[in-house]
Amino acid sequence: MLIPVILSGGAGTRLWPVSREGHPKPFMKLADGESLLFKTYRRAAAVADALSSSAGEVLTVTNRDYYFMSKDELAAAQLGERHPGVFLLEPVGRNTAPAVALAAHQVAEQHGPDALMLVLAADHLIQDQARFTSAVADAAALAQQGYLVTFGIVPTGPETGFGYIEAGEALVQGRKAVRFVEKPSLDKAQAYLASGNFYWNSGMFCFQAGRLLEEMAEHAPDVATAVQACWQALNAQPNATGHMLDIPAQAFAQVPDISIDYAVMERSNRVAVVPSDFGWSDIGSWNAVKDLVVPDGADNRVVGEAIFVDSRNTFVQSEDRLVATVGVNDLMIIDTPDALLVAHPDKAQDVKKVVAQLKTNGHEAYKLHRTVARPWGTYTVLEEGPRFKIKRIEVKPGASLSLQMHHHRSEHWIVVSGMARVVNGEREIMVGTNESTYIPAGHKHRLENPGVLDLVMIEVQSGEYLGEDDIVRFQDYYGRV
View 1 (cartoon, rainbow, N blue to C red):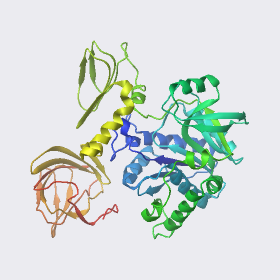
View 2 (cartoon, rainbow, N blue to C red):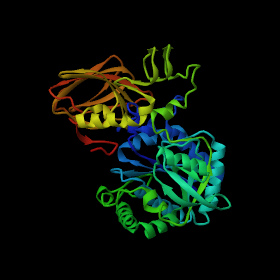
View 3 (cartoon, one colour):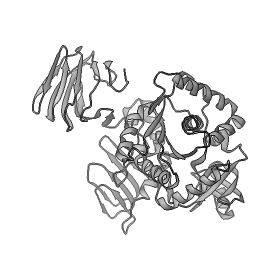
């Protein structure tokens, strides 16, 4: 049995302003309207169907805050009953070694220690599914012989932004891994390319769950011991069974923050590499996104709508507006409703410095978009000023906001379309299209969509403080109390 394990974490700071802490890179929509996580789910299920004789779950390891967005992407992927979703939810990020080890415990317990794990990152793009499936078949054959297998990408140039794997003696399906090396200088990258024995480190793996745990116990016993204690604490929780497994925060805090490469892959002598050429990209910067778009005759590219006049090698991504460039060269212009990035392609890696400065300044643009996803739907800030804020709220059919109260603001709700069931103080009322209700500060209230169509409404807030943290929750269907 081959169980896909999807690692979905990281803020994707080099892809700001589209990727943000509250809506990170795996949820970014590409030009075709599909997110990277959606594509990963479809890819993982397809390869499992091709290579596994029996159906199995798709296991996602992600942050607790991303559970509902991840669940929505899995539902959109329509994998059906053959591949149910199981989610291991981290309270904080602790790098890849703890994530992979906890996933290995879950797979070993459910399917036995010989079950194969295919560990994939949620933010990679792979163009050739057939070649990917072939590479996974080779990796699975090696993993069944007890190897820890990684996928080495055949380099297309002296890339300094990736780590490398040096390959040694040939195996039937791949090669023994000699060593892992960090991101090199340009001179070293050119030497690696010329040798023909080096591959880009993709960060994707295949191994038996039990073998991974054995190798971790041997080469990173501190990590293995802490993860074992965390796993026992997880299983001791009342809700330890089911599709959503909350990793206990106190136990997880004791686990070392270390990558699977450092903890195991670089230390084990049972590591193999499968040379791979299946159109891989880690979408690590705006240059990688730009390269996905077909250029015009002047090497300009656009996602959205743009007009180029006397411009060359310019990339525009605009969600809502027409962008026109006149007499500019070598620019990347990323336009979102509340933030605009203008950068030189050679400085694409430095976009993360913008995010660092926003954090230092306490600016919310590092974390949230103007449209914010919630388990029940979305809200969009339309306008705000001193003592007022106007939002567009969209609630999914059958979904409900928490029963809550605000100390510092009152709210006026106007239904644009759909039907709302509203708890307002001691009353429960139905509010239809073109109708409204007023929620005074200090009143318990709840908004619910009892219908089968989306509920759309406008919320007008007024008060001395309008921050999102002025919420006292009394009851919530999504565990946020």
